[in-house]
View 1 (cartoon, rainbow, N blue to C red):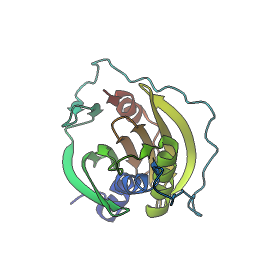
View 2 (cartoon, helix red, strand yellow):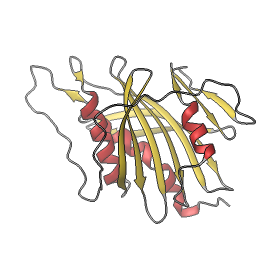
View 3 (cartoon, one colour):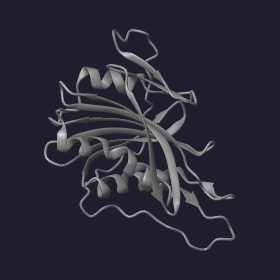
Amino acid sequence: MHIFSKKQLGLSVFIPVILAGFLPISGCNSPKESNTQTASPSPSAQISTPETSSPSVTPNTSSNTGNWYSYKSEDSSYSADFPAKPQEQKRTVNSAGKEINFILVNYPDQANKRFYATAVSNVPLPPGTKFDVEKGLDGARDNAARSANAKITKETKIKLNGYEGRELIMQGQGTLVAKQRMFADPKNFKLYQAILVAEDGNVEFPEGQKFFDSFQIK
């Protein structure tokens, strides 16, 4: 029997809802279109003011990962280290009449009641649409808080290899806390994510930092 039982959904829900929130407002309409969707923060979300600068996140390229499993995505666009070999699950989310297919790579740490996950997805914007990174990241953030019934307690603008991104700390149901890093690739219309969820509310620990430091976008 899984330790997480009913809380397992709370641990794994963040990535799908973030993807669903990213699509509707990630594009600026082409000149022929007149309707523009904008993001509005969830009323229940507590969002701290993002830093005006974008600190660079430096990936850890050393091979000192002990017994950890080094994962590379199917399209070779990103890699990450997990405490053990992760599972790959095909997922689909619907947003603005579009289907977003992606592979949720995840490792549930049953002993410590933690959940590690990564994902990359294509953002199917209409032809001629400009990818608006800031609006897309705002929408992903707001939808995550709203759909997962979570409160954003901290938000920081970050960069990784030139990709704009956000780091979020989210308070979920009960004692669940998630730490999320997401990055947008406007050239290839992709959204990258790495997330850690802890049932005891502690997302600042050496193994967690090791996981985030290992996350690299090619």
